[in-house]
Length: 238
Length: 111
Image 1 (cartoon, rainbow over the protein chains, first blue to last red):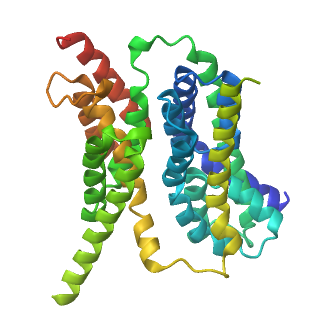
Image 2: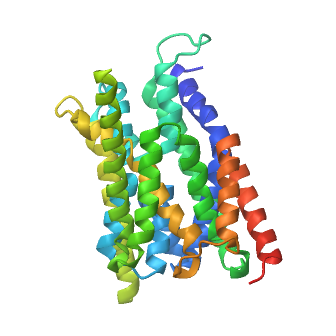
């Protein structure tokens, strides 16, 4: 078999277990977006135009709450800022590629495709032979993720109108975020960032235009940074 | 197209453009710019900060008013889900436990 093709298929296979977690997320987005009053076609279009789960969920909620467009776009920026880190970390592996490849792979740079690809790029399994076509592996992982996201979103939109509000399905958004953030709270600086941002989000809930989230996220980030620098300077003194 | 639909299209396009620009920036500029160490350090705290800022009001201010009591089913279900997330690291189990707890608590607790 052509080694590019097998690298592509390896990428798809590596992504498959993650799709179990992605699909309910897409489904929830579809239901929430319809509940927020977004027309089905636009809710579905958002999944390929934006293609970022957390940002789509929070965007849909803000649209439902009547937040101004500029604040929604700014919030999307903040929610997706972490992708700068992914870009910085994966860029050296893609440096040899042409501009077209880079533009295509950047579109597919989600949390999941990044996690699978960077793991494969940095830890070679013993069974592999010959050089890896990193771009084809990434493309396989990214396209698997993309397909699952579009399909689960579509199912969510189809089901959306039939879910009664009494089920409280909007709560799944908070639960999804809990599942993402809690396992990552392993060190004091990130715990401090999370707690201070959460507390500020409550205090700032009264701010106009739904600006509270942006304020809380920025303050939490600064608190995390301060706690970390304090700890490292204290460590140096010892 | 109605004005409301046009506004929606513009917002979605705006969200898409900023997301793509963020993803593409460093892949394209690699080797030409370097990210200052302080910024790299700060970026690691953005996910926990953003996610918590979205979670906490959902748990403590359902419907817009602060409810710091045991009669708040979302708070209890959320805490239980957080414990499951910590132990299992499973998105699916966290959501399932949290929703089940919410439904049971809504049925049992006095409204």
